Image 1 (cartoon, rainbow, N blue to C red):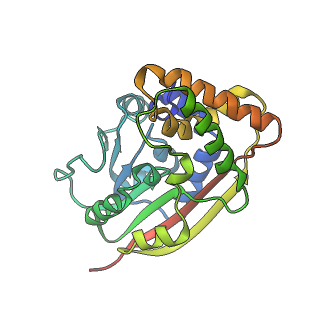
Image 2: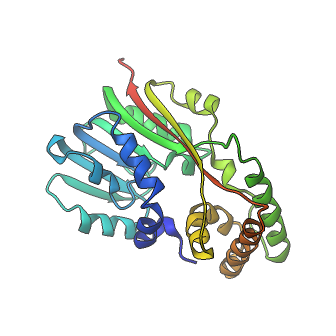
Length: 262
């Protein structure tokens, strides 16, 4: 299966509309300056929306070597550095503290270790520095999405051998209380919520959109069965969408945070 989050071309294709628009909006909340850290940087798209003259040093981290290879080609510069690895495992001791950091469309993938991510970011950002944060939020008006995904998942799990407990992407969404309690080292300067329906013209568009959340499903099956299981999952889910029984939406929270003075 092509996992869009580890394939740079697929990621660029899928993220070119909503995700890039959200990233551009997030980075418009303030002007990133000085030393900038980008957690889950992917293909380095944040550099498209920052004034490079204001950036003394940029350090991007992503777990995918393919994403980083793409980013290195697209954004090569003397003051730009990309690292491969899990943010929670990578040592950044060789760098000075950062003036700003970005964690865009990334924090929810660390659940249940999201607090560890915020704590590490807090330790890496200078007091008074900004954190540009966006993450998946629970839906307020599309309650059927989770129910249909769970229904389809359980049908697929009966057909293929599983290695984990059932999980759907909604388990990786935050609500207002959970995200605020996680951010105790930061002051919220600005917040914005985007929640809007997403429509699909073809099955390929539908599959592209769901590849990220589908990776949550993919890992639940034994390796030899994963491709068949996830393909069946997409097909069955699309049947519900085509019949009008399933709707989906993009729901994300954008926040500009300021590291509290010690």
